[in-house]
Amino acid sequence: MSELNMLEKVERYINGEMNPDERVQFEQLRKTNAEVDQLVVEHTFFLQQLNRFGEWKKFRQLLQFTHTDLAEKGHIQSSRLSGKARVIYLFNRYKRVGSIAAAIALLTTLSISALVWTLSPSSPRSQFEELNKKYSQLEYKSRKQASEIDQIKKSKTIPVDMPFTTGGTGFIIDPKGYLVTNAHVVSGASTIAIQNNRGEYLVEVVHIDKHRDLAILRINDDSFKGYGSLPYSISKKSGQLADPIFTLGYPRNEVVYSQGYLSARTGYDGDTLSCQIEISANRGNSGSPIINRRGEVIGILNGRQTNAEGFAFAVQGKYIYQLSDSLRKADPSVPIRLSGRSYISSLERSEQVKRIQDYVYMVKVN
Amino acid sequence: MKSELYEEGLLKGLAEGDKRAIEIIYKDHFNSIQALIINNNGSSDDAKDIFQEALIVLYEKVRSGSFELNCQIKTYLYSVSKRLWLKKLSVSNRFVSSAEDPASTYPVEDEIEAHEKRDAEFDMMEKAIAGLGEPCKSLLEAYYLKKQNMQVIAASFGYTNADNAKNQKYKCLLRLKKIFFAHYKNGIDHE
Image 1 (cartoon, rainbow over the protein chains, first blue to last red):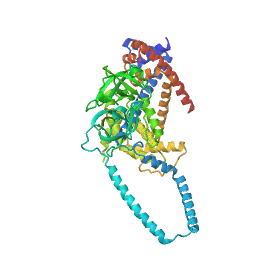
Image 2 (image 1 turned 45 degrees about the horizontal axis):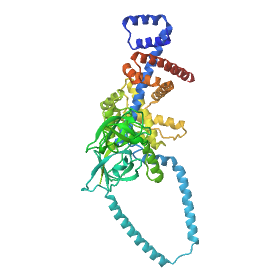
Image 3 (image 1 turned 45 degrees about the vertical axis):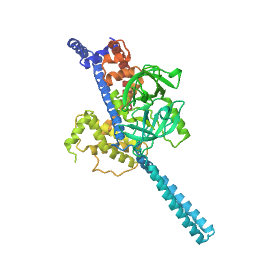
């Protein structure tokens, strides 16, 4: 009997899948053949080990999931939410080096100022006092102006009676409040706001690329609190033909889900920037994320051919990376980081959608 | 004041892998463990690792059938986390002596030792499975870890029928066992 056959028998015996006759026969064999007996014992141990390993792995995943979930809801403090923990950690780590450096710096400063004080000629005191007085007056004025400017700046909320028209859809690409949408959605707008069931915020355009039809927006609103992390990731790969995909967008005043599949690797008229997808899409869907079943954004919906129904085009996800890279190079103060890891890869579709919809906004322009 | 019954309920939930119970325990205790780690030269990532490891130790304990800890969950997690962290520090030479506080700790040496042994075994299994390569890896994971039905597996992997998939599965299992036991016996020899 081959090794493979024997293994199958042993496993069926352990799992109780043998019929009674077979079982009696096998037990007989076990008694007479020590090797078989050993194999049963060994395989029982192995299956147990495998089973426990499976449960352990599942539990670990559950813990990881719980952690990101709680951090996102703000129930636990996480480094990604507040930089405080890291500051304390760095402080603890470097306090000795830091204090020595500080002591040296203090000593140097004191000796230099003593030198300057002894060597520099004394200036006429009255003149100095007059200057000092003028200076403090100036200082007072500028402080007052600054506080007035601050007050004007602080009123960063949406004016009540501002007429908006629906432009399209956008979604968060960085939890600090950066979104991406189509350039054609926001071009020519003077004021832009976004809205979903989380709230309504004012945004500003930080970067626009008309050629690729992409725009990066920043939430610029006092009431925006930031997110802990993103559930989905941005993928650099567009995927295989026939890969199932879905999207969430705002073709009307409510978030709408639709699904389809990747139907061609190039877009309208052989455009290699984009790809073609089979999905029902309307005007307001422009800027919607195209998400695969692992919860990775593979593209952004940007339009459909006017004379054809049922398919649409999407800008490929890798161009979001290129755009944010070029933005970071042009202005290092913009701290965009794109997430390469999806936390919802193993969830059911409906659960994925539930988690994603908080990050998809209607983009309104004025 | 949390009653003993309440904690026992949580532990039962934990043993069953109940999401809600895990979330409550996580929420109630993570911040204090994080503070412990950070105040002792650790980062918040260290805190996450240590806390999750401590939860695994607790999970293994309650799964062995005893819901009686003889101390509060808080004390237990604190003691385990502290031990694990001190161990990690002494390995990486970042050891910082801290005053033992016998009132708030609970003896957990044996459990940690058992946990480390288990961890090493799981590690072995993980490496053995990874060493199989595809499609064996996914096939075995689908059947033995995700407990999927053979028909479903055959369909999703593209086998024409369940028997062929089953046959392939046994071939893979045979290879896995050989790799695993080679490592396992080596591991024991080293000790």
